[in-house]
Length: 127
Length: 268
Image (tube, rainbow over all chains, first blue to last red):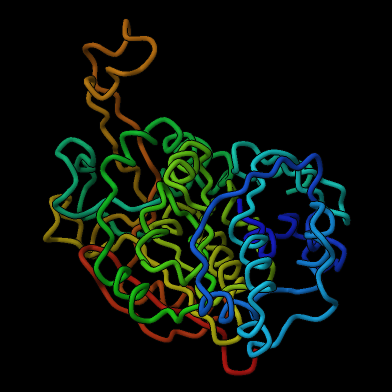
């Protein structure tokens, strides 16, 4: 599961959907792998508005990446900045969480990630 | 979960359901009544459990994208979009858009099917369609192909649509396919007078089990599994989409299936 995907995931518990601290989920005991993927500048630039930057900053820090700038780059800045492009590409698309847990800070539930697959099926008491 | 239908399915997979074509939905239906008692337990037995058992065989019959869905992905989705495939099955739609300029995340209720999709390199998660783990309003589009018809009550089917709508942005699109009641030209022969709530057999030929660990058992007998389906009448999917709070942007029929593209109403 790519770090990009983590930015679109939240707790599956209904009552957590309205709790702001249920997002983003927090990686725990995360095992990461790094893929080698060709950089697609247009894709990254177009993708930028879909990303919750604050959540991405949190995830990046929790996974041990250097802190991101406090605000996202503008499309123009991103195109002009080869290093940021490469760093973002590496974080979002080349980094995968393959083992560990994703933890909801609201309800405390831990979703297992195994062989790159997160399991969001809920135990009956949380449905 | 990808749907059946179509001539590319090997014989023996979807056997004809032996129901009376004259029953109408207003008459008592033991299947509908049994499902209504405890929908979750019923779907566990007649949907989730079945897909877990047939995942490998099922997946081997599901490789050809539906033409309209493929054209939706190739022609109507902008570069940089993020899409979800709820009920992605083996992931056959996750790789349709070529050029790596759209990010798709798949989810399915069946861990075995998700495992197959993951093995093909896709980003996938195991999740229930009524408890999705997606950030509200995060996606440009959502696919939900051949999933909603496995929900055994109308309330759950409408709720599932509501959950899909919650995933998309203000102008996002939700493309839903369900099996049609009106498919008199298919080999199942259902028509508008057929029962809408059905158990549809999936026959796993004995030789499909050959590679299973206990080869002692599967030599001679075929195994038949029964999956629950609610077959949609003309207009019903649109009605459910509106009941779920959505707007019908487009709808149609493609080879034994009704489809709809739904979105948020103007002011949501």
